[in-house]
Length: 148
Image (cartoon, rainbow, N blue to C red; front, top):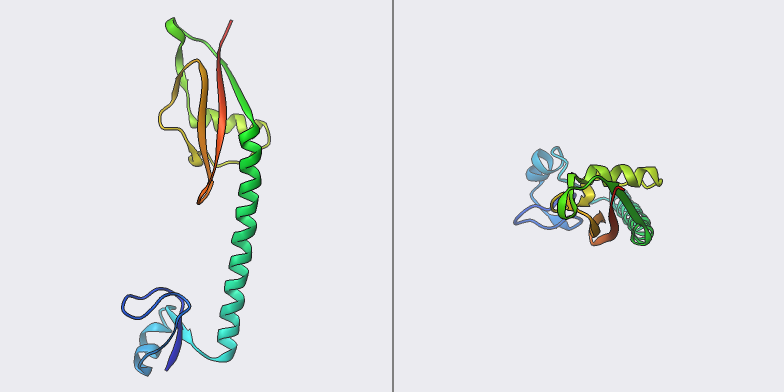
């Protein structure tokens, strides 16, 4: 029986591959488990349509992420905090603080995507990476100023 694989199966093929397998293997394992579907014309058409829709959606999402990355790269966020000797902060600036500052400016970015290696503890300029999509990151400029 000819089937189209809906997921990669070791020793059989990749997603979307049209392979010939024994009828029992297809009917008793692959099709019931949702790992494959029979390679009939209507099924093949539906599968291709589903792939086209997924590609279109991913392209749209990536374009939105690129536009957001461009806007974030132009943005400067400023924090005014109390400091001690040598410009060391009482406390720190964390990704939660940056997330809240972005929300105040109308940007909806998941705080887990703000790549802050360790909290900011000194005054000055800092760059923070924001991972928006695979292979799409933005450099966010953070300015930490001393409170008068």
